[in-house]
Image 1 (cartoon, rainbow, N blue to C red):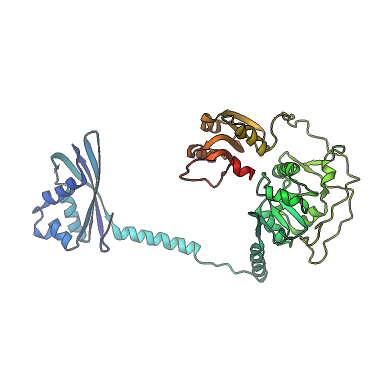
Image 2 (tube, helix red, strand yellow; image 1 turned 180 degrees about the horizontal axis):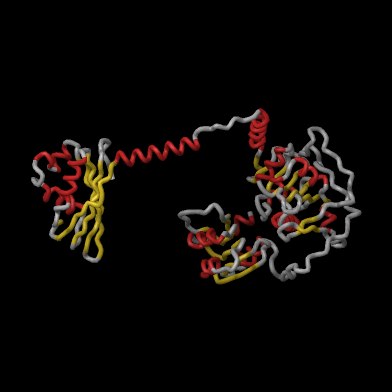
Amino acid sequence: MTLNDTAKYLIHADIAVDGVVERSDVVGAIFGQTEGLLGDDLDIHDLQQSSKVGRIDVEVTSQGGRSAGEVTVATSMDKVETAVLGAALETIDRIGPCRSTVEVSRIEDVRAAARREVVDRARDLLSTAFDDTVMSSDELLESVRESVRVEDVTEYEGYPAGPRVAEGDAIIIVEGRSDVLQLLKYGIKNAVAVEGTDVPEAVADLTRERTATAFLDGDRGGELIMKELEQVAEIDAVAFAPPGRSVEDLSREEVFAALREKVPYAAISDASAPRQFVAATDGSAIPAPDAASSETREPSGAGSPDASDPDPIPAAAASDAEPPVEADSTAEPEADPDEPQTLHGHVQAVIDEETGTVRLLDDTFHEVASAPVSETFEAIAEADEPPYAVVIDGPLSQRVLDVAAQRGVEQVIARERGQFTKRPTSVRIRTADELRN
């Protein structure tokens, strides 16, 4: 609807017609049946030419042999003249060849609506636009330091990394960008993030060329990333945040304490020496640090590890490790040895084998359900627990993508992408070829 800049009021009228009519029929009836009704001074033709009446907007729809809609007339006349014009519209009893009724539903004061918008906007500006906070000297300095650290975040093959990852002799593998930022905050510039449980091939290749330390969260996610690293990378040492904590939440002292207590990977992977774990708060398990080792050292120079030192934080000796904590008697039964243990394995079993099925996986990459590919939507929608990942031997449609986002699915791997009109940011979408590359 187009309004004159000088419009004061909007006349809203509902129309009902016993027949099928179009917009032109309604406009013609308004001009024809009001002509001469109110005298020359209130003739709609003359009022439009003098800009006292704006464009007449009509919206009409027809269904079942009847038509209904709304007429909107903008005026710059006073209240009395506008009310008289609205009453004149209600005298229209025929539109085209059909009987009709016109009823004014309301007359809107355009200026009052504008005033309400001004008041609402002023209220928002009053509460949000004025910054009453005054930063202390320490806060000001820390803000500047933080901005410099954020600028120091670079990328290694598309993944967040510190500025010394590409050229140094040692790297620290963390889970996400926030972990890289936290380590940069404490001066550690050789961290690289894997961005989830699916370790990228570029980072895995980097571990074969550098001294690699995995520094992971003390929760289920950290354990899953460690399992993936065991299969695709070459890790020299492992450090975990305290149970139930994330690397991004640790203080400077906690970060260096965790790195000083890192354990050589050989100590937790040796089949003859069972891996030690301590229980985390969510029921998962993480490797326990070596309690027997007490000789640690602070890094030289600026007091933080980086890529200039082949071993950024010395590993604690693991030869006198304490006996492992007994496993929980309620632990889950062992998985089927024939079932793939990684996302790549499931993609190979479902898509590469051309099974024509869909497979739902939990966050440990165990199969929880499968179905023919034609029943993908129903399988995701009716799953007892929302799956962590979905592998589809077929194209990914918008309908399946929508239900995956609604159920909280984090990853979808399909044979090929479909045509998407909207793409949820919460679901990571890849084809089988993209996953392998």
